Figure 1 (cartoon, rainbow, N blue to C red):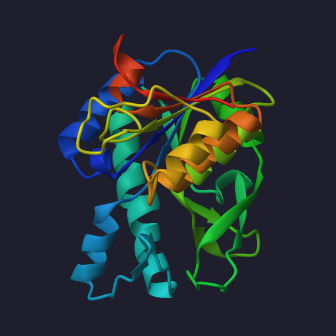
Figure 2: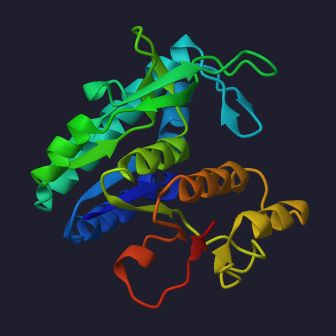
Length: 258
């Protein structure tokens, strides 16, 4: 069984053009089947401010009304996704951009309005890898933005970490799937002010303890939850750290286990 690497990149790479171009140059050199997932980060917020569209956040999560969804679609599926595609092509990595609507790959349902109405935000319900497998088999790299659809004509803003996890789970039926979450830190840190305090391994039991101790909280909490779900549903390897873990030997990062 072939190994498929699914790599999710965060805003710290996307928001820095030099960091993005450097990452994509190295990513292009990775051998074997691969798939890239990206979020949107600060660009959507900047564009919303420029267009005088109010940005509403609750617990760090964006409220997505109709105007905000239009902006997110322009930024995520348009500007960011195509900027990534063009750089991959420049580095001899053939790539195709995706939302969940393309090829009917990811169907979601609108999140219930209670207890908090997040608007047009989707929770993944179905992943179909058939079209993606066809592309990967001819050495084309799919690049996913953080947008899905409901199968009834509605686009939905969807967490990029969740998209990466759900894709990895679905692909685990046909590939040995490895999932990598890349962000600005070297891994999950025991002390957020000390980038050397990487927790090398987290499993379901230690995860609960780290949450109780307050070591894992806020944005890292749903990320690790996605990771635990992935390893429990057939994903062979799940890691969190800087992008260096993909390209350099002997660097620290966090591995998630059952």
